[in-house]
Image (tube, rainbow, N blue to C red):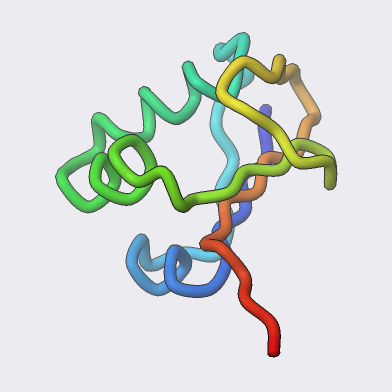
Amino acid sequence: MVNILYFASLRETFGQAQEQVPAQFRTVGELVQSLAERGEQWRTHLLESNAIQVAVNHDIAHRETPIKAGDEVAFFPPVTGG
């Protein structure tokens, strides 16, 4: 299984803070594509938005980043400071 975490506005939009999915995806991009098939909000926020950040096992990741069973994939909106 792959553990997925959703932070901030994504948690509110998707109605969940975390979930587990089967470890059938080779990359972050494949996982994102599968999640985007859940509906318009998923597609808009995960696939069409360039602002969403992704981390795999606490390291910033990209669509090409490999994932495997036991990994933690976190999705979060950009963070601003002040």
